[in-house]
Length: 107
Image (tube, rainbow, N blue to C red; front, top):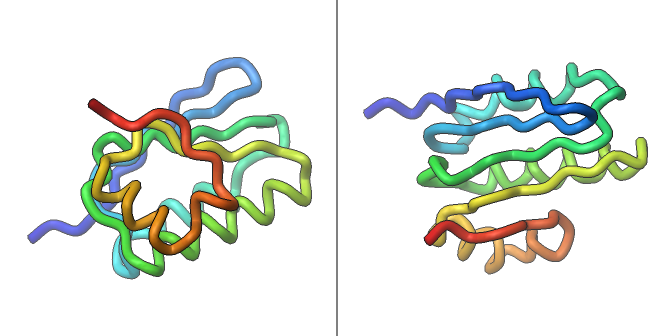
């Protein structure tokens, strides 16, 4: 089974959208971690478009929480959009949604 996480980068003014496709687990998040670490501070808002993320484990949640913390220090905004219902439930059960803004669910 393919467990890669593909990332499509879409700049829009001062907002950067990262469209994620795949699973967010220990074996797949390295590319996303590198991408988030290398972001220029010009991006005041970063959106993770997660409609096509089908799975997230504790490693993926940890990465999101680390990124949210780092962005907060720089007064930047990180937001999750269109989170799959199963992934949203995992985020809610772990309490991650108390720290990371989650916009709308997919229908």
